[in-house]
Image 1 (cartoon, rainbow, N blue to C red):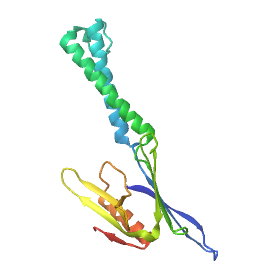
Image 2 (cartoon, rainbow, N blue to C red):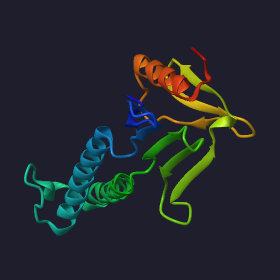
Image 3 (cartoon, one colour):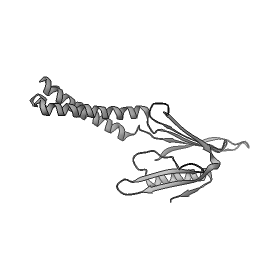
Image 4 (cartoon, helix red, strand yellow):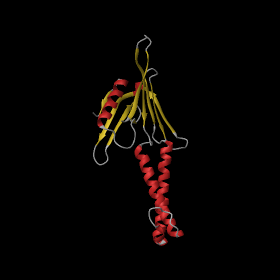
Length: 198
């Protein structure tokens, strides 16, 4: 699903229990199963290449599955060592992106205060926290973008007066069409605007 959505429940002023005027959507960032999987695979492979390169240089077998001491250090051992270093740098990037939860955050729509807050985590630095605040009155519509083909794209956007369209869904693997339609319709109904692109 695009984001896990919760509508906070509360009591209305006249005493009956009805849905509150706050809609929260949690947006999944880098902490996805696929990122963990690739970080583990790249780390394992790069470590193997580096140990093979070191084994050929030291003439001591550092790998439990094969005898890398039979490799000639130049050119085979040095190339494997360089592949290992490059792979470990890539795996370091993947693990740091997971640790920092790049792209993770939430969307909060509040009809009581007429405010919308979009929050995402970025890379460390002065722009680590990415926050966009604006009024619900500025929202013109909820736009659904569906592009099929080799690089499919399925995303929800808020069309806001005086701004570029603001993305609401996670980046990465495409969202199932059913979930995208349900999410878009629910948000448009909550904000009282139309849905474009369906």
